[in-house]
Image (cartoon, rainbow, N blue to C red; front, side, top):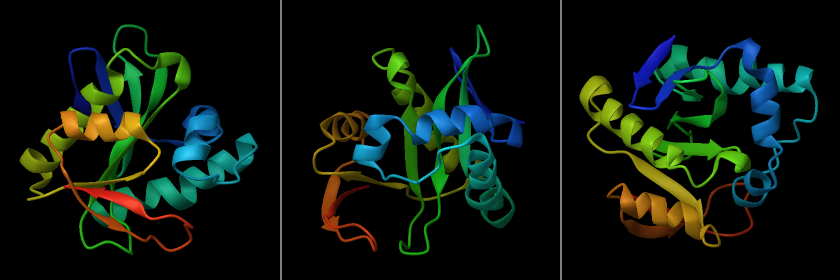
Length: 166
């Protein structure tokens, strides 16, 4: 189901058919370095990840991660969406683009559309973002989106503190 449309992109709910793009995204070196190693190494594990980690958010919260497809070709280039983590009071935005599609503005275009969707459709008064201190590209994108670094936080299971933007 298409949730958000931009000039060049379609953002849609993740389905079991997206196991291959999820597998690729979760194993990108930049994802592992800047987000986490989710330990998903097979298509079956990616399908399980979708069923256990992504899909339940749609039912529970009415939002979640969305696959980013190029409108012109239908090629999946990444994911972007809203996450309600148990360890945070506020909803945060997350995104990941396959490295071969970097530097085309897709992350910014998708994240801007998701933020607008969060405000205008879902009615969230505020959306936050979390990134690592070493992820300068994500910090720059969040700043371009109008978010500002408010504080550093310690997330459970992570050795280093994360930057909290709002």
